Length: 147
Length: 72
Image (cartoon, rainbow over all chains, first blue to last red; front, side, top):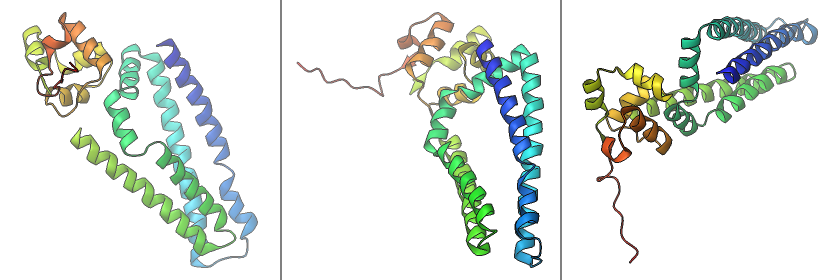
């Protein structure tokens, strides 16, 4: 349990780092597309701002959740069991996690960056990444019911 | 695969959550094992059997799942 407690503390540091990193992307829109006022660029700017805000909010929630887990022994044990459950590991493996999630995040991030140079390619990549995440979640849900 | 986990739990008045916590898994996994949807791995089967103080063969009915043809 001490090892898992240490893991959670390390995760909190990573989440804090993620929050810091998410403060910069919205500024890219201002730097690159200062004079662009079309609807598509508005969408990209809004999507970037929304995604970064969402990631910051989720990171704060996970940090607080981890702090609560570290303090409560029984909840820590339950969380450890949930994370290392063999059935869930099998379901995640069948659904292609975590590679699918990593690729989706990379697609979306790359799409947001490329959108500053080619808006249509960027939006297509963001859409592909989003669809991939949804498809992976559906497959995971189906296997959760079967197994 | 059939198991006697549900009967053993009721006999010992243990909930699925208590058993799951004791053997290091989740309640959903215990449910899936009891209903036969999921076949426990050897380490988990051993932990469950050890928890009830029985052997694996006494808790898990392997007759339907395994048919061994002797190499002789």
